[in-house]
Length: 234
Image 1: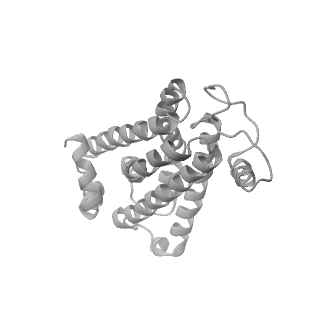
Image 2: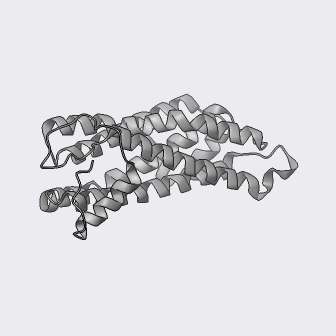
C-alpha cells in the first residue's frame, strides 16, 4: 500500500478499512502508512503555524506538532487496550493502535484542509495574536472531535463482544471516560511543548517555563480580545 493512497481509503472506504483492521489484514503496513501520513500533514500544518513568528519557530512548530500527537498516543493507547480487555472485547493491542492512528490521521487530514483558511489569517491578522491562536484552537477542536467520532465508529465496528454484558452502556461510557483522559493528556502535552505560534512581540523560545494551564490561558486570550487583560500566550 502506497503511503498516501491510504487517505482515499480512510475517507471514502472507511467501512472496508475498519473491516480489514478487524481481520488483521496488513496491520503493520496500515499503521506505518498512517504514521507517515499524519506526521507529514502535521509537519506541514506546524510549519504554517510557526511561520507567523520566525524561522526558528517554524522549524520548532513543524517538529513539535507531530510530537504532540505521538506522545499522547503512546501515553493513552495502552489504557484503551486495557479498557477493551476488561470489558470483554477481543481487540488486540495492534488493533487499538491502528484505531487511534486512524483517528489521528483523520485529525491531521482535517487540519491540513484548514490550511488555506489559516494561511489567509496568517496574511491578514497575524499580528492579532490572540485571535489567530483561538482560531486555531477552534480548528483543533473540530478536527479532534471528528477524529474521536471516527475512533468510536471503528471500535463499534471491529469489537466483538465476548461477555454477556459487553453490549451494555458501560463499555461506551468507559470509552468516553478514556476520551476525556486523552483530551486532558493531549492538552497538557501541548501546554508543555508550547509555544506553537510564538508571540510576535516576544523572542523565540523552544519551550516555555511550566506554570498555569491550557484552559486558563484560553480564558485569558478571550479576556485580552475583550480588552480585560493582556497576556503572553503560546
